[in-house]
Image 1 (cartoon, rainbow, N blue to C red):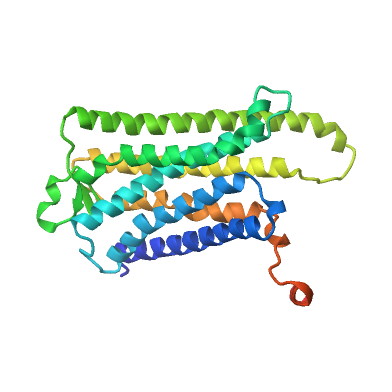
Image 2: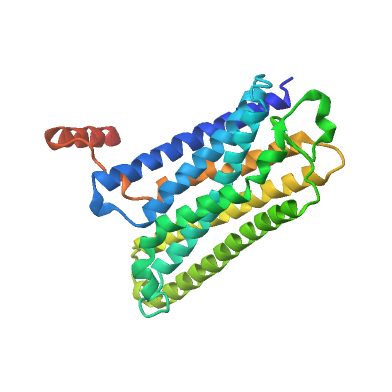
Length: 319
């Protein structure tokens, strides 16, 4: 009979393989567009490129250790290794929250009418993207530095002493001190603010899309046109991306809270939560690649070789 560990191992392996390959291809795409076809570059590409980096960091620091454990590689990481891996995981996860929120806010500003209150911000918004990333890195690094003190590698003889436990690491109960209260308060406020901004910007985009559909409905009501505006398609993609993020984020959080406050340490529930936590980093690049029509316009073969390559691809399609 197939064990649950083997099933989890295969699931995490497929998730990491799809996510790492997808995010790598997406990152290469943005780099190629920036250097080979700069006229196709969009300001939002910088946000998406940083999101792919955060996604890969999340998959490497959470998915890979789970794969190693499920396939029998136990006690690979010592206390220092667990502290570093879990700290990077928490920073990348927090950075993903911030970047997804920034993505939704940026798109909401971009599609706002020129006569709206966001018109002045729209012109200068792309200039502050790097400043936002620096702010995200510093705040997440400071908020989650408390994790290092209470995180350590799992040992078979001390499982009961942990407040939160996974296959790889355990988190000791936090002391009732002002530093602990500040850590919990900062982590809660951090997630609340960025989820609130996500909700507000997403609502704003939905209202703009609804208003736009009403305005153009009479234009295409008597025709069979299926024209799709690039801004509308990009906005719909980002709304779907935000929906995926919120769904998987809260499934992961519910599993984490259940494990942390249950009487028994149920590692299987935490593993399921970790898998759902990796679904967004794994699936988001597939959604972005499928919705980006610039991929088909990229040709890296110049001159005659480019024409031969195009003929070869057309022959494959006709075949």
